[in-house]
Image (cartoon, rainbow, N blue to C red; front, side, top):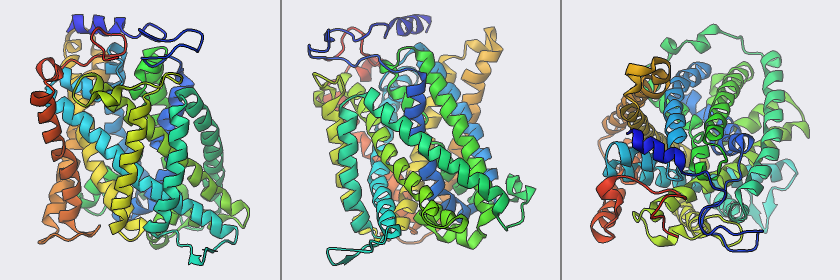
Length: 512
């Protein structure tokens, strides 16, 4: 174990790795180390997309837990904090573009490692697919605020998956182009978008705390007042989904100058999310009665803004939501392409995923392929007629698989650093005990929610509110990885399945 950690610390000190160009003219075969802690915060925060989660997630969560949004957001933060400790410690000793895929494979089992990387990738693709619809919906709402309600003889509907998906796909392509051109450009754009988003959120939510007419209650912060165990489990999964994405900074670990910067960036983003979710949850409940909060779905933030201000100021939250959706699309393309790059480098996916842009030093083919697959999934999802139903179906499915791979990563950290329990109790609390407790909570709520989906229906129906359909989606995400893993093990004969050890950008044996 100590040898593994010493080797991992030795990796990643170079500026570009073997074959890196000089003077910006020679082609690059590995990714550059150009990012600092502020860039990491921007990538993690954009991937988490607090504004989008607040704008469309709070209403969905309120429909489950009632007027206990602050309680469920605070409760869900605790296991996620334990998971963050696992990611930070693992990244400190082994920064890797594959992060959880590599760590779980090396420490627990190669098959579990592959499935961790697989469900992470598939879950993000599904997220990107429905976020295209969210982006399109926000743009149509903006058009409506500007007085444009018809285009080419068609009535514009922000809840139509057909219209919103087509518009969102155009934005996805543009975000992909920026992602291909380099992380520094992407991070710089995301910083500007984040500053605007957070200023709008702080302004409107801060004003809503005092201007709202709904009586404040400390019961909003009481998790024991949540109506039922089923509501608690589903609310926890939805809230964990809202925090999902902070680990995006660890996917660019090979491009961060110092491993500690990635850990700091992820933790800063995570704590910022907690503060924003508590503020927004309280402000929304001060301004909106429960029925209005739960019924507005994907238009929740727009409705909130219209309750507090007149146009044109009322459009600011909607603009912030649009920026958040755009930044989130781009921020999720980046870590997913890095994850498949690492898997291709290990031979668990095809070599096509390892191709680096000769000028920008980014995994260009993987980035484009991820966008193409997400676009295809977005088009398939048109069978679900409304954006609200699409969000409901996707969020629950992604929440379950996120709980699974977060838990596996946490267990990997606890196993890998268990020796710290004897020598360094304080570090062990963050690297072993916290991750284990977080994993136990996430597995419990994810398992309970999966069982409740199964028990809630007696037949299958292609509908967002059918329990068997809701359960089938995460099951397919997981099971679909088994034949791919089998082909990698026996077809490609990947060394990963014999040793569980992944390569990194500076390690011997890296595929160039």
